Amino acid sequence: MKKFKIGAISLLTVLVIAIIGVLTVHTSATDRLNPLVSETVSYAKVPKNTQNYKQVTIINPKDGKTRAYKIKQVGSYDQIRNILRSIIRANM
Image (cartoon, rainbow, N blue to C red; front, side, top):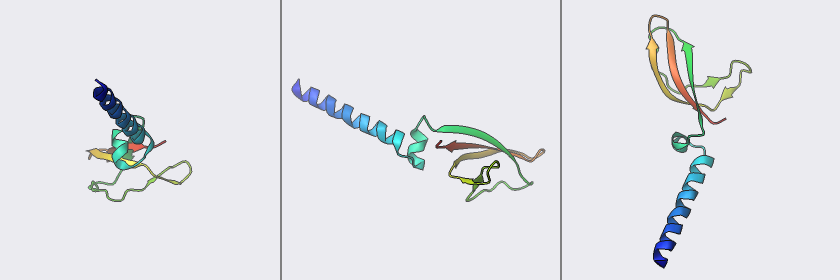
């Protein structure tokens, strides 16, 4: 019974440390698991036939500063209205 208690306490300690690590460390891998990272859907007008995006820099239109946001998904391109829908995960 004593070994079971020690094992349970050890497992609980490892789980608590892992959860704290996921919530406090901000990398692309941990942000996928972190439910506290906000997710924003944005829309942008783009020229026709431009659907391949690499090294995207996101700029805040209000102050002109670049942001460290990550583009999670780019999709739902509407060819008629030239609108692109993207999902952005950001540490705020």
